[in-house]
Image 1 (tube, rainbow, N blue to C red):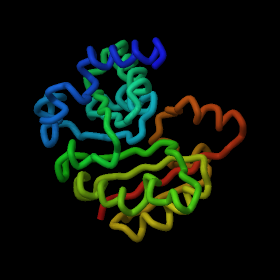
Image 2: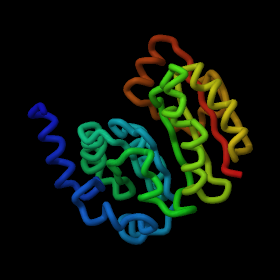
Image 3: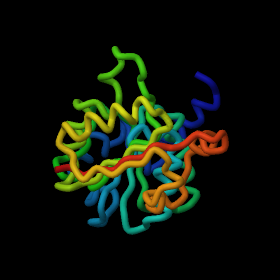
Length: 218
């Protein structure tokens, strides 16, 4: 392990906005995010595979009356988002370090209002299909924790993953699908508050179009 990673893991251990193994809230937070962490009754929004948390932090700044939780297994990445939120004194941000497969261990039925999936690994090979974050088994997880008519968002530069997602989402308990294959030229861009991850900015500068969809739990 590099010295830089060690430093970031230490930051996570000391940061109240990171929920991870070894902290009391890690085993007791399920169903209690509003009462035991955020201390309010505001809507809860997840960013899955949040990486460095740029979107989590950006949305939290744009929507102070909502609570945001970035979820990722990589502690060194989460540390960057955590520190950014602390430097901005954002009280409506948390980071959960866990595998997305274990969401049901941390969220109760109907505890979440929205889910964002931003630029996930496309898992392009056929044998990787079950690892795609829009695979039916993941969609079932999302339905379990979303409120009725809760919103699911997906942003990706990968056309194959996007086409796959469009196909399976409508077949697995989501409705009111809206989508575009060129987000920045679409009216749907208005809800994004011009927030871009580092990689999204790189894609944009190279001329790639961004695919986006949103739908609701039916």
